[in-house]
Length: 120
Length: 110
Image (tube, rainbow over all chains, first blue to last red; front, side):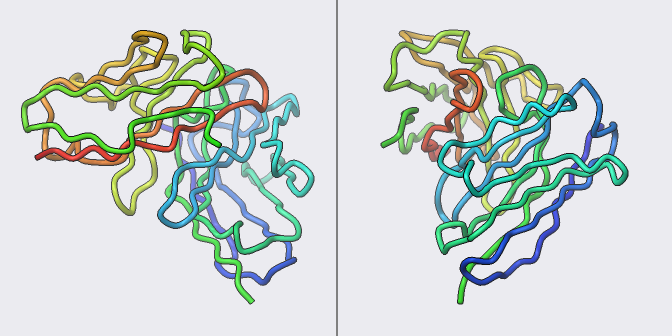
């Protein structure tokens, strides 16, 4: 069974860079079975798709975030990473990593999430 | 402006049946949108119930089913249980990065 575990800084200041990691267990991050990605949820609000990446490097991103966003696979550690530059208060959210199959962009497996607060 | 529209809230009686829908402002929803449905309880991560419009995961209770009805994706719950009270989100894929969650439906079992 695939499991995912996110980790992150918790709190950061405006204009800093958010770096999150997601450790994957149960399959290789280079597996052709899955693509890997991130979804976030601001406090009290709905889900927002951030982006994904697969073994071939195909990496579609949310158009509204793509200028600040990098999602990559770190194969030696079997983990997924997210970097979001120049954060603002509206980036405050719980960030979930996930894994999906097929080509829809949705996730079949989810991590438990990590909370990020952007505040001065 | 949301691209994918869900009912903000619905109520179902224990043992009853309810259908949640997922409409697209761009056009009719078909199986080509690979609709997914997620359940989220307070303080928990989402859990995927339905993928590719109809398909269930091994953990999906049999009382949940997915379909396309009248140009909308639909999630039907037959025989609601108290533990089904949750937020439900749909997801539609329009190709590449053009994917959208709906705003979510808060389902009350009462």
